[in-house]
Amino acid sequence: MRITGLIFNVQRYCIHDGPGIRTTVFMKKCPLRCLWCANPEAIKGIPEILYYQNRCNKCYRCLDACIHGAISVPSYGEFVTIDRNICERCEDHMCITSCDQDALKLAGRLISVQELMEEVKKDNIFYRNSDGGITVSGGEPTSQPQFTLEFLKRCKEEGLHTTLDTCGYTSWNLMKEILKYTDLILYDIKHMDSTRHKELTGVPNHLILRNLETIFTKTKIPTIIRIPIISEHNDSRDNMEATARYLKKIGATEVNLLPYHRLGIEKYQRLGMDYPLGTDIQPPNETYLEEIETIFTSYGLNCLRVY
Ligand code: SF4
Ligand code: SF4
Image (cartoon, rainbow, N blue to C red; front, side, top):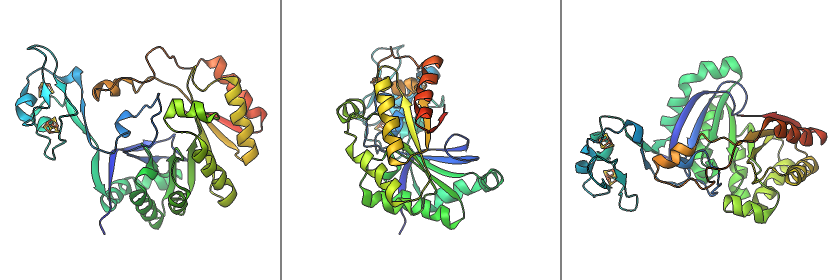
């Protein structure tokens, strides 16, 4: 059976998504709605049009190309707008092919496991020379469980090291199958208070924590906990302390801190979306990050910062 998945990027030469040099496959679809998400093009499980206003020369060829009338211009001389409720996401994407400025791009392509294997195997030599491998990220890879499982399985058959970067919000039955072909887990923890977790991500944290505890009790797969540090949202000393205490209790040893950055903001504009976190939030400062690191190391956890 030809299993296909919807991905939005295959990034080569990654050095922060697991050991060595890696190729990271970014999959579409995510059950969470984190306010700070830096990959908004990953959230929906459908292909989406990105509009790069800075490249657009206002030739308006795309208006004529879109037979569904999804593209319009408020008045001559202004930038175009895409009505995403009208857009049919038609397969030939005439809007994109009509644009010779590269101002319209598609986020999301269907790919088979076989095609993806051929793509990632191109960098075999880098994986082998650096003890690197393949990372599946997103979005949330477990949102396309069959594809993720088959892809990781094929990677293992090829002798490649595999890393699953997950938010943990999935059924254990699905997760445990995927973990059969996973060498390393990068597991996100966003807030210890479930009510606050739901305000920040759209879902409570019970399932996420339960799955993490099951990973530590039922598997021996090395697991690195990844914590986004979002100023004024989850970075309070109380929450950091509670997270460190919890991680120590369940047997975690490795923590990565992911300080908030604003690099994703432009992507929201390209997708015609509002930036849900608002533009006032600043990245955490160095002194406070050092304090947070001290909290985790005081619980005996190895703590690294990842940007
Ligand atoms: S075809 Fe491209 S450059 Fe021309 S108006 Fe449309 S997006 Fe802009
Ligand atoms: S994908 Fe199709 S419907 Fe959507 S804007 Fe492009 S041409 Fe129009």
